[in-house]
Length: 156
Image (cartoon, rainbow, N blue to C red):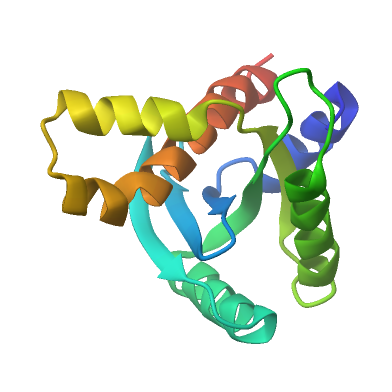
């Protein structure tokens, strides 16, 4: 996303809670912000089924949690190029925006899963618990990075 696109997203969602998605092939990690855009918290990990069912769950969750916008982790390659996973995320977004009026933006998710794994290891989390929580922790790392940038844009 460009600087301008992030500014537009901030204008549309300022003062509202955001939901971050870490899209995997088997799961979707979710994290949620507060309305002040200060703190991102892990929410849950959804097991992926079919697109329509996954989106139904996401939209319901957004209504329940009063979400104003979505931040999708964009899995760029380490050199900044887009590979198949990034293309899959963009396709998910294009299909999702046909079904919701929520504002959607991307955030570079490079190394978020690695950082999540390190945080869980430092917390001495068991292997089973790490597997269960890694995606929502990665979504939290994605969202916290975005919140810090968006907060500065909203208050400049």
